[in-house]
Length: 344
Length: 165
View (cartoon, one colour):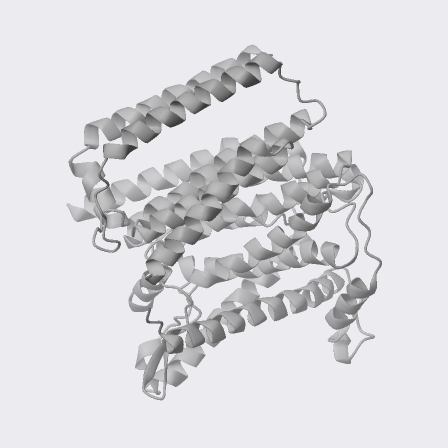
């Protein structure tokens, strides 16, 4: 048995880095969300813990850890604990195929800032996204509470419905790029135009579906507190509740990274190859460019949340099945026709 | 033992245990969860055979879509262990006998079967490009016909759903 220990070490460091980044960004997204809400509603937002309330996420986390942990007597114990764990696990898994940057050269070794460049990257993401519903469904069912159950059934049907349109909008993108590897897609955009220019409708569909998959307003029907007393995490307390809330923010972060990589050039930025700087510096600048794009998307998520009210359930389903899917099919047909025409 | 063999053995043991769990567990939800785990281990086997595309599609279709619907139905109908209908005794005996017969037949059939040894990594048919070329060059007609089959199944489901109202 021969194991490349150096390779394993490199990947371990990279995975820990990406996980830490996701967690920190998710942590500060909660702060950002409250600040954005405060600005939109003309309030001050959190400003007690630390400068401009920057320590607020730590205080919140500490509070969640010290809360009493309650497992309802009639709940299925195993599944009750499995629910939030799965939600968190699935949220963290997607980051593996996202290219966070080009290669870094350290001590003569080329290190790719992507955990796994598999040739089916997009399908992997699609697979993980389709698993995301289990955390919510199991948690809601195991709580043995009818409101939680209703919320988890809602979540499942919503996520399945919007997954279809999401997949169809991705197919149109794949026709253009001809590759399922995210790294290839980003590299193509680096040497050409961003995919957003070719696929505006596809991007719009993907964006709406990303909102629905993350259970964000205006699609946060599974957490509609005025109808469901709080939604699928009604019975949860302490850090298990924290996991559910946290998973939502990680999902937001990852889908922002995904949208930036698929449609807005990922780690590439205009004039990247004509700066004349050392490759390592360009890679770091590229990572910063990706990060800025991600933050803009995160801000957009929050902006929408505090601007648009929630849909009604039938409106949500009608939008998904009667508008999004036909639009995505149309987009696919047009893209296919153009690709075929250009090939002659 | 090579790394591949160890991974294969671990995967196989997990998939067999999970498959047993599907049948043996009293609670329908844990049956479904065991089935999902089984699908994952089978997807792992596909990866071992260098068929990543097949593995991911397997997860998307079975674990991501079909099993969610299974879970959905179980949750909606609120099936539990205590409302499971009690099977009659003769049914159990009949099941045991027919299962045993099937086992004997399988053993007899597999005794002479020679398994062609497959070098993992040697075959590239499971990669998406090769699979697509094969499907759309050699098997275009069956592929398109099967899509019509799916369409008819969908239309049928919609018709049945409409009838209720």
